[in-house]
Length: 258
Image (cartoon, rainbow, N blue to C red; front, side):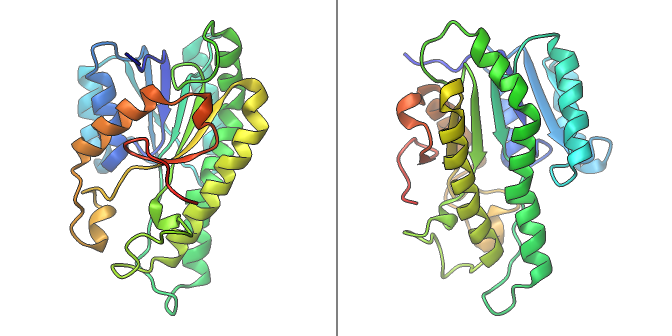
């Protein structure tokens, strides 16, 4: 049976929604990671209180400030993680932080498009760049063959709303900037997979489903609870291997068309 057992994980956007639930389920595993780096823009603020409460109960959780739209913040977080790992690598990077603005084709603005791209596309790009040395170190030091999320992997949280083939829930929300940004994130994932295949770093774009989060609920009543989505995602992460590298999958591990 496949197991997800990375020594270290970093999750962006960990203070609420999918990120917070991911940290909660990871630390509740029978074999939790030794290090769970839970990052958010403002760890001292009120929106991070639930995360701080969780970290107070579990010493594996290290809360770090990381603003994915600020390169200096990303570099500082990478330096902190390097210090904590004391020469070891980072096994799993989950680029989860993202935003959505409720716009239509006629109301979308340059400012909204630019902000959405900065967080949903450029953010995962610079975060991956900053943590790539640690991911490479984890892969090089691993005795495992092939690719896996327990060895060295980048998971970019995407959305089927960015699928050019399916254009999920168009009638519920046009969200132009969001859709375009997720299509771009999918291409970034594909490019990462091509470049990092030689390093045996697994790269996946993952659609978590339409989930009952603050973001997901902006477009109606999502069918998936956050617990259901994350339980399935963790099961999927445990099963991903080199045959899935560079693909776009949903929370259950099924392929999503580009």
